[in-house]
Image 1 (cartoon, helix red, strand yellow):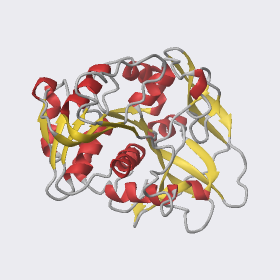
Image 2 (cartoon, rainbow, N blue to C red):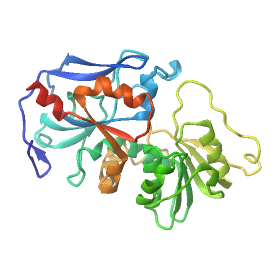
Image 3 (cartoon, rainbow, N blue to C red):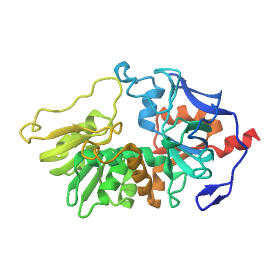
Image 4 (cartoon, helix red, strand yellow):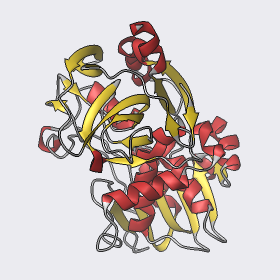
Length: 342
């Protein structure tokens, strides 16, 4: 594949695509399906990379999307219904093979499930800036969530900020916080091996037992009751705790006794499905996506992609990755699939 000035060499177009499906609890399959013909304003995208969202996709993989949330949890271009079978995912990066002339050959990001090629309206893709490698661009969806969280939180220069949970979302939230002037940012996680990465991103690091207190703003992204307790304990008087975790089914203990009321703490939910009310009158989804992609022009963020698998191996490898173990973002590589197809 040749890349010149943000464009790729075209390859023959195909009429069928292969997609990853969650077909049962802990089970995936690669299924082939026909591609629809291009309508006016559509584009055909050949996928280069997609990102596996460990938190959300683990809930899908385990069949733990609550019945009451199944409609709201639908991903763009999802097929099938929860719990199974379902084609799910939202971190695809590829090159436009056919469609509007100004997009053909461009590398684009799209909220699309894991699939080696797909047809979508051109308005649903966002061009990846020339300075951002396609592999790193799979982080765009997580970065949109982190960006939206800061808008919800009202964070600003000089804040003392604690981020509890050193997964991809927590790390991106901390990295954005550290970019603001005079902020004092601490990432808190139970895994001490996250410390060098936190430092590389401009943040401090602490284990839960050493978590600083009296924070102006706390973000919680560990998706655990102990993490939420740590976040509440870290908040200063009248501080705000922003909950970023998505727990799926089940109940979560929240320690709202003790000093929660006497310190007049605020517990706020943040979710990427809608643009933050503080920006919604002026910022639409396309503008937020474009901003997230532009912010990815930082080579330090490559460290957030800790695994890489071939799409041809995804039915076997994705269950292994989602069943547990360490790691951050797993990037799915599609060039091997095309080589195997011949």
